Image (tube, rainbow, N blue to C red; front, side, top):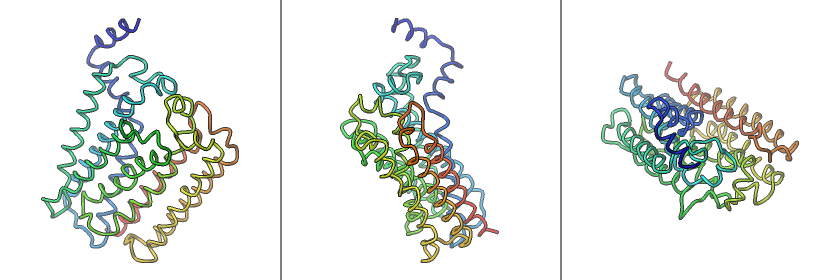
Length: 322
């Protein structure tokens, strides 16, 4: 039966294969890194000293945003390759466990995506600094971390808080700094401070996706926080990460680290902290609802908070250009 399914999949037409590759890339997850990179670029554009308007700035930000999406698609690919036993339990309809794609094809698609991401990253340079390829080296480090999260011998996904750390660094901290590098040099405190805010947030918030995956993760030996401590205690452990990171925004304004519009940034920090407190309430009110087959509502709130934060930072710095 398996041979029949595989042969049928291999003989499908180009359009069907293209749709399958898109499914493999998990397109919904690509919007967040694109937005994060654009936000980082626009933030750098409006940061002091202001960068003048120039077509090369827009080109660099846009190329970088496509790079961020491609890198995330590659990360999704490597994750699905090594998570096949888990996905057979948690996500059986995905291309690999459903046998619509074979392992060789998955490897080829994933490697090509990584190569495209690195090529695009090399093209991203800050305004007036054509030899500065900081974005490329940031992407190389991020690529290694995404590999370490899913693949042996590291497979940090099995190692509790280390799993969250190898998500938070590339998708929180480094994503913002990479976006910044498309416009300005990263040698300064401001881009790393902003990146740290999102990195600390994801250090806890990344766990929201683990609650619904407990069955498959446990079967594969992954010691995520919900498995180590149970849903209720894990919810309390990650709760501060939904509030405290965003208090760093008004603190950064107070001490002159953040150079965007001070009023806008302060309001943004307060709003996100309140939103984070509400998200915590949804988790700890009925912790038994966290460990269900579908993602808990806190997972959706996590994505919305990232969206508000990314757009908020971009607007707070964009207004300084006018």
